Length: 405
Image 1: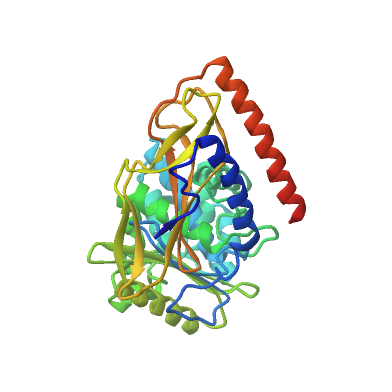
Image 2 (image 1 turned 60 degrees about the vertical axis):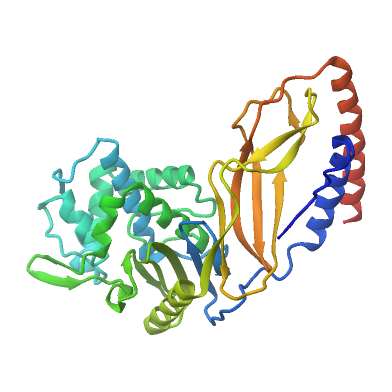
């Protein structure tokens, strides 16, 4: 493994200038060829496979390309519902009213996926949740939205607020069901992040996604997630389809304590979606092993400090840094520390500063937050003056290189 900008024998002020030069070089030449992982190929336009335990990206293709989420948007609807329950504002026994709008837009008259809720009836939240998770009922999604926020439009504001809090940076939700709507968009990476969040935050409620069937209004429906029946450890999440986005799925599977999340979209048929998702999960579960790069609180690198009694501050990860690598592979693993600096003194211990980005070959496999491993007090007046002069010089060099780019 190689680390970018390791200059242990030089004064920090010289290091600061060299770091600026190295970063510019990385920006010029460090982005090509990251579109696909080694060892797996797919004809799908978008696919993503993530190991949840380490956060390692095992495969990605078009992971940040926007597309319509279709019924996969219901994972966000479920998250808002789970959040309300966890915060104590809602119980599973609470009953929600089935409006004519919910019945007509998402129920039997809509000829879309539905739990077949009867208009003007009242249904407990626990049954609406099952109607959402198992047959992917559009009516269930709308009833939940109206029950929590009064209207579906108001509920989408809660969806987008929660999405921002979770860190879904490229998603926008327009309705609770995922029915086609202008402006409704997501990415594979956002959906994987959302799925991992739901599993980690609401493990008990998440289990509903693994239930094999659901009966309502005397109609029995099988779980629409095809991965559940494949004996590969799959335990949840949803499929989706629109004419524009094609067939997609978010799925999760656990084998021998290892959990993977797969997101595929843009398949031409449901069979192609199911086949590619299974192949990705099978490949991920059998082809990788864990390698620990740093133990928790190991000093990983240093950030420059402006105006401090020391010229730098140690950077650490509060948790072990582990990455999955292909078994028997001699792929190069490289890492670099990325932060906006220098950090202004005084600096407390445990302050988030930047990230450790780990690449496996040409694939960006891991992005780990780093915090300061120590406190740095403010320096003397002469130290601060010297730092100001060096920072000015570094800025001149950086701007010169940016003009060359």
